[in-house]
Length: 261
Image (cartoon, rainbow, N blue to C red; front, side, top):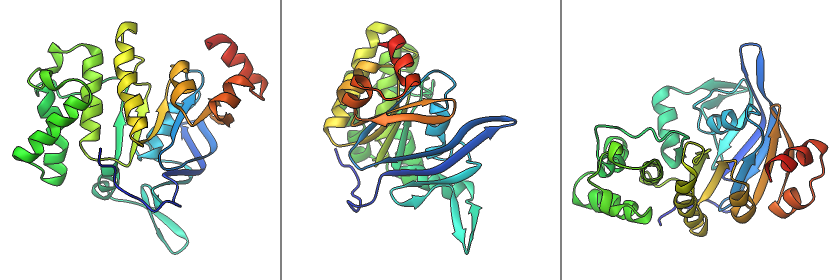
């Protein structure tokens, strides 16, 4: 898989003091986090802890109220003029998102397009990649997720797990440096979860940098380089899977893990 290169010393994602509120509800309270190139970072925690909101801040689907977010060394969503930050125009934000793929809880496929057409859509619209070469590249991505034989099927003809794998192929079609997964298996029947996680394991083996919000503790333990436990809009604890699952330091982490493991 062709993953765009980046200077090795630059973190893939760096968040400093990220704050976000919705009205009077403070959802993120000065979040600091760094993810290096090639790492798999899993975010775990109870519902409402701010995990998904933080993920959406990484590619500016949510604007931040404070702090700075950088992806591949580049400030996300804002330009600096002197000592002030100014929000980018939507078209410029869209250009920044080109190398950040995102897979949602719900698959968000275009219902009137086949699996192949879904994968072809963004490269064609954003980069003008059309024709036989683009079609073959899209078919290769569908093969990568085990669905080349289903290229001509519409979303309604696919299972939930198959739709999610098409969504992963669609995100990969833009040749991202970073992949964001927002609870990608939470909407699936249990027997369909394994196929999606297998695709994600393959991406990790290929060296794709991934930030994954998940309730799949086995996946986090097996695949993640770092696991971060969030609660109440703060990072409670972060470490390797062995550290966080095997010897959590905080009472709140231990209480959470005792219920989910």
